[in-house]
Structures are given as C-alpha cells and as structure tokens.
Amino acid sequence: MKITKLLPLSLVLAASFFFTGCATSLHHGPILPQPTADKGALGVSQSAQNMESRIGWGTFTVFAIPVAPVTVNGVADQELMNQIKDAVQQAGFKVQMVDSPAAAGNLPVLSCKVEKFSFRNYTWLFPLVFNWGTIKLDVSIAGPDGKVLWEKNYTGKGNGFYDFGTPVDHALTSILNELASDLQGVNLKS
Image (cartoon, rainbow, N blue to C red):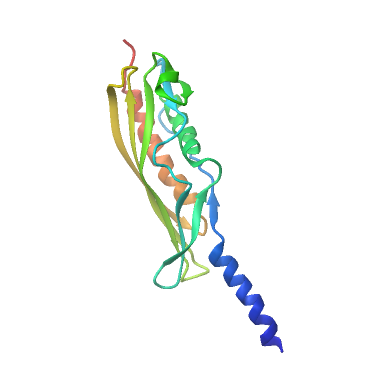
C-alpha cells in the first residue's frame, strides 16, 4: 500500500525536476577601472544581437543529459545591454540608450553581438552540483555613417556550485571590467 502511494508522488517530483527550468538574473560585480574624466556622449543599443532567453541547461545522469532549460529573467537582450551600459558609464561616457543607430542622431553607437552565452550544470553527484559556462561577445562602436570606429571580442568564463547566478555573474563581470578598461582608452571626441 505504501509503495503505491509513493510511486505517484515520486513520479510527480521527477516530472517537476525534468520539465521545469531554472531562471537567473544578469548582474555584475564591481567594475574596477576608476571612472575617468568626461569622454562625451555615446549611444548604446538597447538590444544585444543574437541574445536568446535560454542561456543553458540543467543536466541529469552521469552522461549530463540536458533536461531543464536555464533562462534569463526579463528580456534577455535588453538585460545584457543594461549590464554593458554600466561598464560604458564607468569608462567615462554619458550613455544614451537607443533602439536604432538612426535614433542616436550624430552620436556613435556601441552595439553587442552575442557569439556564445552558454551555461550547464552537472547534478549526478547531488548534493554537489557543479555549474560552468562561457560568454563570448563582439562589441563595436560605429559612427553615425555606420563606419566601425572600434571593435573587440570578449570572452568570460565562470563556474560555481548549486545555482547559475554565480558563474553567470563571474563571467559577465570579467567581460565588463575588461570592456570598461578598454573604453577608457577610446577617444571618440573630434
């Protein structure tokens, strides 16, 4: 009798594990470069290209079979650009968020293309759950005429335990620190 009551309960618990996903918010740690003197205004695109809501998978079994999607809370492409905006401001620029280059008027516009935003976990050793992942971004600044004035590729990696927030935050923070440092050396004033 007890087994017949436990079986449906265990099936419901297993199904909830397999068919529900995790969600994480994009946050960053401290951006280390000290703010510099005013470098002028810079448009920043409101949306990152190729940024999807699903950023990874929770896995199951010794073979790490992906079973539960990991998503970003909010609108993923806009959440990423809000994080990038903080690095641009830390570098000394006055940011104007724009939905298109035309909306920026005569300002150069920083944009971001996501090449990879992928995180996974390994749950076979539960209660030890290992998480890891990589973010690869192509960041560029184009003038009002569309000509690329500056560009660079960034890669950040992170790992942690139990939740996806820690590895995502570590990878993103490393990219934002490097971006802010690089932007301090960019002169867009004519």
